[in-house]
Length: 114
Image (cartoon, rainbow, N blue to C red):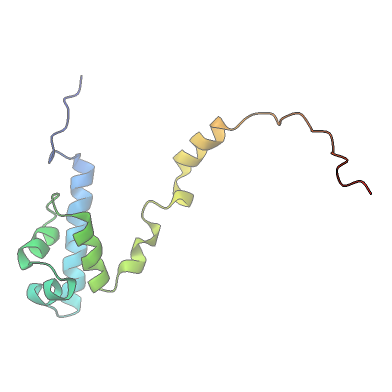
């Protein structure tokens, strides 16, 4: 039986993606020629919090990530994150739960017969 995950014990795949996001934020900051203090100021966060994000620390708040991406002008790149239309597995499960036959046809009402 797998052990339960603690608060900061995340799957390796997720840890890798968090680290990649941090690196992408760092690259975007450096391309703009901004220091950590510059971006932290624009995002309204502490420099240590931005450094934690760039280092891929998993405890960094989601709101901080979104705010930093906003400060970088990258918030449009978030549109595809968890997009329900891109969730092929979820769509397949939903389709499997749909009824297989339609209900009985209903008789037309003569309420509007003139």
